[in-house]
Length: 212
Image (cartoon, rainbow, N blue to C red; front, side):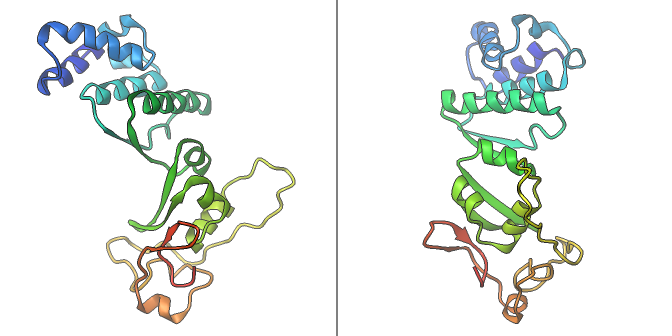
């Protein structure tokens, strides 16, 4: 299918506009993600990786969502192209008043794009907070280990990363109590027996840790 056919399908199936208005709407969607109008008659293999991501974004936006889930949106792209796609997403978020759920492993990217961050371990949220508060003062031991393991661009930064011991448990058979206790450097017996719940701390962050 050409780009035009893909966008037409989304608009038609969901009855987003009258049939006569579909070509105009397709052109508007391409302009929104900064693709040329002649992209409408081209096939996906004729585009670069970054352009294909823009096509995917335009197809998602065709149904006028309030929430956009961006799961590893830029993980397969070159760094320079990542920046272009991320900046496009930020512009669209502001322009269209979108809520974007951005899923990623790149912590620098998460810090750049997010207003609030949720950190997950073995399928459970262990900490939630405003981005700068969470990055400046992480409360959960797993969040602390993640941030200390991230590469630093500061040549004077000589901090040691926290090495987590043990293998990552299977999500199909998670440990009892706190799921992180088998690798946590500060775990106590209670951690293996009692499952922590997300609790709001004075900083406003939510954290699931008995010792936070």
